[in-house]
Figure 1 (cartoon, rainbow, N blue to C red):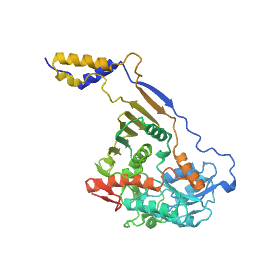
Figure 2 (figure 1 turned 90 degrees about the vertical axis):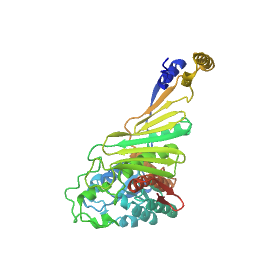
Figure 3 (figure 1 turned 120 degrees about the horizontal axis):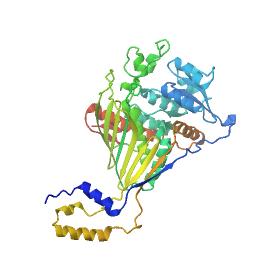
Figure 4 (figure 1 turned 135 degrees about the horizontal axis):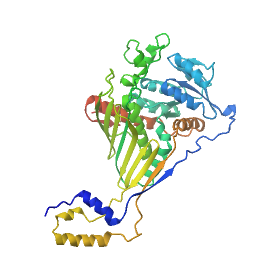
Length: 450
Protein backbone atom coordinates (compact mmCIF):
# COMPACT_ATOMS: atom_id res chain seq x y z
CA UNK A 1 0.00 0.00 0.00
CA UNK A 2 1.35 3.40 -0.98
CA UNK A 3 2.20 5.51 2.07
CA UNK A 4 1.07 9.06 1.28
CA UNK A 5 1.24 10.29 4.87
CA UNK A 6 2.91 13.70 4.85
CA UNK A 7 3.72 16.60 7.12
CA UNK A 8 0.89 18.57 5.48
CA UNK A 9 -1.55 15.83 6.46
CA UNK A 10 -0.02 15.74 9.93
CA UNK A 11 -0.57 19.45 10.44
CA UNK A 12 -4.14 19.13 9.23
CA UNK A 13 -4.74 16.28 11.65
CA UNK A 14 -3.36 18.45 14.45
CA UNK A 15 -5.96 21.12 13.95
CA UNK A 16 -8.72 18.55 13.69
CA UNK A 17 -7.50 16.61 16.72
CA UNK A 18 -7.42 19.61 19.02
CA UNK A 19 -10.55 21.15 17.60
CA UNK A 20 -8.71 24.49 17.68
CA UNK A 21 -8.48 27.27 15.14
CA UNK A 22 -6.43 30.43 15.54
CA UNK A 23 -8.71 33.28 16.56
CA UNK A 24 -7.79 36.94 16.32
CA UNK A 25 -8.45 40.22 18.06
CA UNK A 26 -7.26 43.73 17.25
CA UNK A 27 -6.45 46.45 19.77
CA UNK A 28 -6.18 50.07 18.65
CA UNK A 29 -3.44 52.13 20.25
CA UNK A 30 -4.03 55.79 21.02
CA UNK A 31 -1.03 58.13 20.82
CA UNK A 32 0.13 59.15 24.26
CA UNK A 33 0.22 62.81 25.37
CA UNK A 34 3.96 62.94 24.91
CA UNK A 35 4.54 66.63 25.37
CA UNK A 36 1.95 68.17 27.65
CA UNK A 37 2.87 71.75 28.49
CA UNK A 38 1.08 75.03 29.20
CA UNK A 39 0.32 77.28 26.26
CA UNK A 40 2.56 80.00 27.60
CA UNK A 41 6.14 79.01 28.48
CA UNK A 42 8.23 81.39 30.54
CA UNK A 43 11.17 82.87 28.67
CA UNK A 44 13.53 81.39 31.25
CA UNK A 45 12.20 77.90 30.46
CA UNK A 46 12.44 78.17 26.71
CA UNK A 47 15.08 76.17 24.84
CA UNK A 48 16.84 77.95 22.01
CA UNK A 49 18.42 75.77 19.33
CA UNK A 50 20.47 76.28 16.23
CA UNK A 51 20.24 74.03 13.19
CA UNK A 52 23.11 72.92 10.95
CA UNK A 53 21.85 71.72 7.57
CA UNK A 54 18.42 72.71 6.25
CA UNK A 55 18.13 70.27 3.37
CA UNK A 56 15.48 67.60 2.84
CA UNK A 57 15.74 66.10 6.33
CA UNK A 58 16.86 69.24 8.12
CA UNK A 59 13.95 71.30 6.86
CA UNK A 60 11.55 68.68 8.23
CA UNK A 61 13.29 68.59 11.59
CA UNK A 62 13.19 72.37 11.77
CA UNK A 63 9.46 72.45 10.97
CA UNK A 64 8.72 69.82 13.61
CA UNK A 65 10.97 71.27 16.31
CA UNK A 66 9.48 74.76 16.27
CA UNK A 67 5.99 73.32 16.78
CA UNK A 68 7.02 71.87 20.15
CA UNK A 69 6.10 73.95 23.22
CA UNK A 70 8.89 76.12 24.60
CA UNK A 71 11.26 75.40 21.69
CA UNK A 72 12.66 78.18 19.51
CA UNK A 73 15.11 78.28 16.60
CA UNK A 74 17.49 81.23 16.96
CA UNK A 75 20.07 80.55 14.20
CA UNK A 76 20.59 78.40 11.12
CA UNK A 77 23.60 77.25 9.12
CA UNK A 78 23.94 75.79 5.65
CA UNK A 79 26.62 75.93 2.96
CA UNK A 80 23.94 76.66 0.31
CA UNK A 81 22.50 80.15 0.57
CA UNK A 82 19.12 79.08 -0.79
CA UNK A 83 18.54 77.20 2.43
CA UNK A 84 19.14 80.35 4.45
CA UNK A 85 16.02 81.67 2.76
CA UNK A 86 14.22 78.39 3.48
CA UNK A 87 15.10 78.51 7.18
CA UNK A 88 13.63 82.00 7.45
CA UNK A 89 10.53 80.90 5.59
CA UNK A 90 9.98 77.91 7.88
CA UNK A 91 10.51 79.83 11.11
CA UNK A 92 8.65 82.92 9.92
CA UNK A 93 11.62 85.01 11.08
CA UNK A 94 12.74 87.34 8.32
CA UNK A 95 15.77 88.34 10.39
CA UNK A 96 16.78 84.86 11.59
CA UNK A 97 20.59 84.85 11.84
CA UNK A 98 22.02 82.59 9.13
CA UNK A 99 25.55 81.58 8.25
CA UNK A 100 27.70 79.20 6.23
CA UNK A 101 29.96 78.54 9.23
CA UNK A 102 28.60 76.18 11.87
CA UNK A 103 31.40 77.26 14.20
CA UNK A 104 29.47 80.51 14.71
CA UNK A 105 26.61 78.49 16.23
CA UNK A 106 29.03 76.69 18.53
CA UNK A 107 30.29 80.01 19.86
CA UNK A 108 26.81 81.52 20.27
CA UNK A 109 26.00 81.63 24.01
CA UNK A 110 22.29 82.15 23.26
CA UNK A 111 22.08 78.65 21.73
CA UNK A 112 21.25 75.89 24.22
CA UNK A 113 21.54 72.95 21.83
CA UNK A 114 21.88 71.99 18.18
CA UNK A 115 20.23 69.91 15.48
CA UNK A 116 22.50 68.61 12.70
CA UNK A 117 21.21 67.18 9.42
CA UNK A 118 24.26 67.20 7.17
CA UNK A 119 25.67 64.57 4.77
CA UNK A 120 27.10 61.50 6.49
CA UNK A 121 30.73 62.47 5.85
CA UNK A 122 30.27 65.59 8.01
CA UNK A 123 28.54 63.94 11.01
CA UNK A 124 31.64 63.15 13.05
CA UNK A 125 33.26 66.57 12.81
CA UNK A 126 30.09 68.47 13.64
CA UNK A 127 29.19 66.23 16.61
CA UNK A 128 32.71 66.16 18.10
CA UNK A 129 33.06 69.93 17.70
CA UNK A 130 29.66 70.51 19.28
CA UNK A 131 30.48 68.32 22.29
CA UNK A 132 33.86 70.03 22.73
CA UNK A 133 32.10 73.42 22.64
CA UNK A 134 29.73 72.33 25.41
CA UNK A 135 26.67 71.99 23.15
CA UNK A 136 24.17 69.14 23.26
CA UNK A 137 23.27 67.91 19.79
CA UNK A 138 20.66 65.90 17.86
CA UNK A 139 22.36 64.29 14.84
CA UNK A 140 20.64 62.57 11.97
CA UNK A 141 21.17 58.88 11.26
CA UNK A 142 23.32 57.00 10.50
CA UNK A 143 25.45 58.42 13.27
CA UNK A 144 28.78 57.87 11.55
CA UNK A 145 30.28 57.57 8.10
CA UNK A 146 32.88 54.97 9.18
CA UNK A 147 33.40 52.67 12.16
CA UNK A 148 36.39 54.72 13.35
CA UNK A 149 34.33 57.91 13.29
CA UNK A 150 31.64 56.23 15.38
CA UNK A 151 34.23 55.37 18.03
CA UNK A 152 35.36 59.01 18.13
CA UNK A 153 31.80 60.29 18.42
CA UNK A 154 30.87 57.95 21.27
CA UNK A 155 34.05 58.94 23.10
CA UNK A 156 33.31 62.65 22.62
CA UNK A 157 29.86 62.25 24.16
CA UNK A 158 31.42 60.59 27.21
CA UNK A 159 34.46 62.87 27.49
CA UNK A 160 32.49 66.12 27.40
CA UNK A 161 29.41 64.74 29.21
CA UNK A 162 27.00 65.99 26.56
CA UNK A 163 23.51 64.92 25.49
CA UNK A 164 23.73 63.34 22.02
CA UNK A 165 20.57 62.02 20.37
CA UNK A 166 20.77 60.11 17.08
CA UNK A 167 17.86 60.53 14.69
CA UNK A 168 16.59 56.99 14.07
CA UNK A 169 13.12 57.94 15.20
CA UNK A 170 11.75 54.38 15.17
CA UNK A 171 12.95 54.01 18.75
CA UNK A 172 10.36 56.65 19.72
CA UNK A 173 7.52 54.83 17.94
CA UNK A 174 4.56 53.61 19.97
CA UNK A 175 4.59 50.42 17.90
CA UNK A 176 8.21 49.71 18.86
CA UNK A 177 7.39 50.50 22.48
CA UNK A 178 4.52 47.99 22.49
CA UNK A 179 6.66 45.35 20.77
CA UNK A 180 9.41 45.88 23.35
CA UNK A 181 6.89 45.34 26.16
CA UNK A 182 5.63 42.14 24.54
CA UNK A 183 9.13 40.71 24.10
CA UNK A 184 10.13 41.67 27.65
CA UNK A 185 7.03 39.88 29.00
CA UNK A 186 8.30 36.59 27.52
CA UNK A 187 5.57 36.23 24.90
CA UNK A 188 8.09 35.16 22.23
CA UNK A 189 9.76 32.55 24.40
CA UNK A 190 13.31 31.83 23.23
CA UNK A 191 14.31 34.08 20.31
CA UNK A 192 15.24 32.02 17.24
CA UNK A 193 15.73 34.49 14.39
CA UNK A 194 14.94 38.03 13.21
CA UNK A 195 14.05 39.08 9.68
CA UNK A 196 13.50 42.54 8.28
CA UNK A 197 12.95 44.13 4.89
CA UNK A 198 12.23 47.48 3.28
CA UNK A 199 12.15 48.60 -0.35
CA UNK A 200 11.43 51.45 -2.72
CA UNK A 201 10.74 51.54 -6.44
CA UNK A 202 10.96 55.11 -7.73
CA UNK A 203 13.70 57.62 -8.67
CA UNK A 204 13.14 59.81 -5.61
CA UNK A 205 13.34 56.76 -3.33
CA UNK A 206 16.63 55.91 -5.04
CA UNK A 207 17.95 59.43 -4.24
CA UNK A 208 17.77 60.79 -7.80
CA UNK A 209 16.77 64.16 -6.35
CA UNK A 210 16.53 67.25 -8.60
CA UNK A 211 19.29 69.72 -7.63
CA UNK A 212 18.21 73.31 -6.85
CA UNK A 213 17.91 75.18 -10.15
CA UNK A 214 20.17 78.05 -9.08
CA UNK A 215 22.97 76.00 -7.53
CA UNK A 216 26.39 77.45 -8.36
CA UNK A 217 29.84 77.95 -6.79
CA UNK A 218 28.67 81.47 -5.95
CA UNK A 219 25.81 80.41 -3.65
CA UNK A 220 27.30 77.09 -2.44
CA UNK A 221 30.61 76.62 -0.64
CA UNK A 222 31.45 73.52 -2.66
CA UNK A 223 34.99 73.06 -1.34
CA UNK A 224 33.88 73.09 2.29
CA UNK A 225 30.92 70.81 1.51
CA UNK A 226 33.34 68.17 0.19
CA UNK A 227 35.21 68.15 3.51
CA UNK A 228 38.24 65.85 3.57
CA UNK A 229 37.07 63.85 0.53
CA UNK A 230 39.38 64.09 -2.52
CA UNK A 231 38.26 67.23 -4.35
CA UNK A 232 36.05 67.00 -7.41
CA UNK A 233 34.81 69.65 -9.82
CA UNK A 234 31.55 71.37 -8.87
CA UNK A 235 28.69 68.92 -9.48
CA UNK A 236 25.08 69.79 -8.52
CA UNK A 237 24.02 66.13 -8.78
CA UNK A 238 26.60 64.99 -6.25
CA UNK A 239 25.40 67.74 -3.88
CA UNK A 240 21.77 66.63 -4.16
CA UNK A 241 22.36 62.86 -4.51
CA UNK A 242 25.30 62.33 -2.16
CA UNK A 243 23.84 59.08 -0.76
CA UNK A 244 24.72 57.40 -4.06
CA UNK A 245 28.48 57.66 -3.42
CA UNK A 246 30.44 56.04 -0.61
CA UNK A 247 32.75 59.06 -0.38
CA UNK A 248 29.90 61.12 1.11
CA UNK A 249 27.15 58.74 2.17
CA UNK A 250 26.54 55.26 3.53
CA UNK A 251 24.18 54.06 0.80
CA UNK A 252 21.04 52.02 1.31
CA UNK A 253 22.56 50.69 4.55
CA UNK A 254 22.81 54.14 6.09
CA UNK A 255 19.48 55.31 4.71
CA UNK A 256 17.19 52.30 5.25
CA UNK A 257 19.02 49.47 7.02
CA UNK A 258 19.81 51.69 10.00
CA UNK A 259 16.06 52.08 10.64
CA UNK A 260 15.56 48.32 10.72
CA UNK A 261 18.61 47.72 12.89
CA UNK A 262 17.87 50.46 15.41
CA UNK A 263 14.22 49.39 15.69
CA UNK A 264 15.28 45.78 16.22
CA UNK A 265 17.87 46.75 18.83
CA UNK A 266 15.30 48.80 20.73
CA UNK A 267 12.63 46.10 20.71
CA UNK A 268 15.04 43.36 21.84
CA UNK A 269 16.93 45.50 24.35
CA UNK A 270 20.22 45.03 22.51
CA UNK A 271 22.99 47.64 22.55
CA UNK A 272 25.91 45.97 20.83
CA UNK A 273 27.52 45.47 17.46
CA UNK A 274 26.90 42.29 15.50
CA UNK A 275 29.65 39.72 15.89
CA UNK A 276 29.71 38.91 12.21
CA UNK A 277 28.15 40.10 8.96
CA UNK A 278 27.96 38.74 5.44
CA UNK A 279 26.37 40.81 2.68
CA UNK A 280 25.79 40.73 -1.03
CA UNK A 281 23.94 42.79 -3.60
CA UNK A 282 24.74 45.06 -6.50
CA UNK A 283 23.76 48.02 -8.65
CA UNK A 284 20.92 46.26 -10.42
CA UNK A 285 18.43 49.05 -11.18
CA UNK A 286 19.90 52.54 -10.91
CA UNK A 287 22.90 52.50 -13.24
CA UNK A 288 23.45 56.24 -12.98
CA UNK A 289 27.12 56.37 -11.99
CA UNK A 290 26.62 55.61 -8.30
CA UNK A 291 29.05 53.32 -6.51
CA UNK A 292 26.77 52.13 -3.68
CA UNK A 293 24.52 49.08 -4.20
CA UNK A 294 20.80 49.56 -4.78
CA UNK A 295 20.05 45.98 -3.64
CA UNK A 296 21.68 44.90 -0.39
CA UNK A 297 21.01 41.74 1.63
CA UNK A 298 22.84 41.20 4.92
CA UNK A 299 23.06 38.25 7.28
CA UNK A 300 24.25 39.02 10.82
CA UNK A 301 25.11 37.13 13.97
CA UNK A 302 24.12 38.81 17.24
CA UNK A 303 25.29 36.50 20.02
CA UNK A 304 23.83 33.20 18.84
CA UNK A 305 20.91 34.77 16.95
CA UNK A 306 20.87 35.06 13.13
CA UNK A 307 19.43 38.31 11.74
CA UNK A 308 18.59 38.64 8.06
CA UNK A 309 17.94 42.11 6.59
CA UNK A 310 16.93 42.79 2.98
CA UNK A 311 16.95 46.21 1.28
CA UNK A 312 16.01 47.10 -2.27
CA UNK A 313 15.66 50.26 -4.34
CA UNK A 314 14.13 48.28 -7.18
CA UNK A 315 11.01 46.82 -5.54
CA UNK A 316 8.50 48.57 -3.27
CA UNK A 317 8.28 46.71 0.05
CA UNK A 318 6.73 47.99 3.28
CA UNK A 319 8.93 48.15 6.37
CA UNK A 320 8.46 44.79 8.11
CA UNK A 321 10.14 42.88 10.93
CA UNK A 322 9.53 39.26 11.95
CA UNK A 323 10.75 38.26 15.40
CA UNK A 324 10.63 34.47 15.47
CA UNK A 325 10.41 32.80 18.87
CA UNK A 326 9.70 29.40 20.36
CA UNK A 327 6.25 30.60 21.43
CA UNK A 328 5.26 32.33 18.19
CA UNK A 329 5.95 35.09 15.68
CA UNK A 330 5.82 38.83 16.31
CA UNK A 331 5.41 40.75 13.05
CA UNK A 332 5.91 44.51 13.21
CA UNK A 333 5.34 47.19 10.59
CA UNK A 334 5.59 50.96 10.82
CA UNK A 335 1.96 51.29 11.91
CA UNK A 336 1.01 47.97 13.49
CA UNK A 337 2.11 44.66 14.92
CA UNK A 338 0.67 41.22 15.48
CA UNK A 339 1.63 38.23 17.58
CA UNK A 340 0.61 34.76 16.43
CA UNK A 341 1.19 32.16 19.16
CA UNK A 342 2.62 28.71 18.59
CA UNK A 343 2.29 25.95 21.18
CA UNK A 344 5.55 24.30 20.20
CA UNK A 345 4.12 20.86 20.97
CA UNK A 346 2.69 18.01 18.93
CA UNK A 347 -1.01 18.56 18.29
CA UNK A 348 -1.50 15.10 16.81
CA UNK A 349 0.23 11.74 16.81
CA UNK A 350 3.65 11.92 15.17
CA UNK A 351 3.59 11.40 11.43
CA UNK A 352 6.64 9.19 11.97
CA UNK A 353 4.16 6.45 12.88
CA UNK A 354 3.61 6.08 9.14
CA UNK A 355 6.68 3.85 9.31
CA UNK A 356 5.04 1.54 11.91
CA UNK A 357 3.19 -1.66 11.04
CA UNK A 358 -0.58 -0.97 11.04
CA UNK A 359 -1.33 -2.64 14.35
CA UNK A 360 1.47 -0.78 16.09
CA UNK A 361 0.39 2.50 14.48
CA UNK A 362 -3.20 2.04 15.66
CA UNK A 363 -2.09 1.25 19.19
CA UNK A 364 0.28 4.24 19.29
CA UNK A 365 -2.33 6.69 17.99
CA UNK A 366 -4.98 5.39 20.40
CA UNK A 367 -2.63 5.82 23.35
CA UNK A 368 -1.46 9.28 22.18
CA UNK A 369 -5.02 10.58 21.81
CA UNK A 370 -6.01 9.26 25.21
CA UNK A 371 -3.10 11.10 26.81
CA UNK A 372 -3.14 14.33 24.81
CA UNK A 373 -6.58 15.15 23.45
CA UNK A 374 -7.98 17.97 25.63
CA UNK A 375 -11.48 17.81 26.94
CA UNK A 376 -14.03 20.30 25.66
CA UNK A 377 -13.35 23.69 27.21
CA UNK A 378 -10.11 22.55 28.77
CA UNK A 379 -7.79 24.36 26.37
CA UNK A 380 -8.14 28.07 25.46
CA UNK A 381 -8.31 28.82 21.75
CA UNK A 382 -4.99 30.16 20.41
CA UNK A 383 -5.36 33.83 19.58
CA UNK A 384 -3.50 36.24 17.32
CA UNK A 385 -3.26 39.63 18.97
CA UNK A 386 -2.86 42.69 16.73
CA UNK A 387 -2.15 46.29 17.62
CA UNK A 388 -2.88 49.08 15.18
CA UNK A 389 -2.76 52.82 15.35
CA UNK A 390 -3.67 55.80 13.18
CA UNK A 391 -1.02 57.64 11.16
CA UNK A 392 1.54 58.63 13.77
CA UNK A 393 4.42 61.08 13.62
CA UNK A 394 7.36 59.64 15.55
CA UNK A 395 9.70 62.52 14.63
CA UNK A 396 8.20 64.96 17.11
CA UNK A 397 8.39 62.54 20.08
CA UNK A 398 11.99 61.76 19.17
CA UNK A 399 12.90 65.45 19.06
CA UNK A 400 10.95 66.06 22.27
CA UNK A 401 12.90 63.31 24.02
CA UNK A 402 16.08 65.17 23.06
CA UNK A 403 14.88 68.57 24.24
CA UNK A 404 13.56 67.16 27.52
CA UNK A 405 16.93 65.47 28.11
CA UNK A 406 18.70 68.77 27.48
CA UNK A 407 16.53 70.30 30.21
CA UNK A 408 16.69 67.41 32.70
CA UNK A 409 20.14 65.94 31.88
CA UNK A 410 18.51 62.51 31.87
CA UNK A 411 19.63 60.01 29.20
CA UNK A 412 18.06 60.13 25.75
CA UNK A 413 16.44 57.11 24.14
CA UNK A 414 19.18 56.83 21.48
CA UNK A 415 22.57 58.11 22.58
CA UNK A 416 25.89 57.99 20.74
CA UNK A 417 26.77 54.48 21.96
CA UNK A 418 23.45 53.08 20.69
CA UNK A 419 23.86 55.08 17.47
CA UNK A 420 27.40 53.76 17.07
CA UNK A 421 26.28 50.14 17.42
CA UNK A 422 23.41 50.63 14.95
CA UNK A 423 25.72 52.33 12.45
CA UNK A 424 28.31 49.56 12.85
CA UNK A 425 25.82 47.07 11.43
CA UNK A 426 25.57 49.32 8.35
CA UNK A 427 29.34 49.73 8.03
CA UNK A 428 29.85 45.98 8.36
CA UNK A 429 27.26 45.35 5.65
CA UNK A 430 29.03 47.82 3.34
CA UNK A 431 32.49 46.44 4.13
CA UNK A 432 31.31 42.88 3.49
CA UNK A 433 29.79 43.95 0.17
CA UNK A 434 32.95 45.70 -1.05
CA UNK A 435 35.37 43.08 0.31
CA UNK A 436 33.16 40.23 -0.97
CA UNK A 437 33.69 38.30 2.25
CA UNK A 438 32.26 37.95 5.73
CA UNK A 439 33.49 40.49 8.27
CA UNK A 440 33.66 40.63 12.06
CA UNK A 441 33.80 43.45 14.62
CA UNK A 442 36.91 43.38 16.80
CA UNK A 443 36.05 45.20 20.02
CA UNK A 444 39.67 45.24 21.23
CA UNK A 445 41.04 47.05 18.20
CA UNK A 446 37.63 48.58 17.39
CA UNK A 447 38.00 47.74 13.72
CA UNK A 448 36.13 45.72 11.11
CA UNK A 449 38.11 42.65 10.04
CA UNK A 450 37.69 40.09 7.27
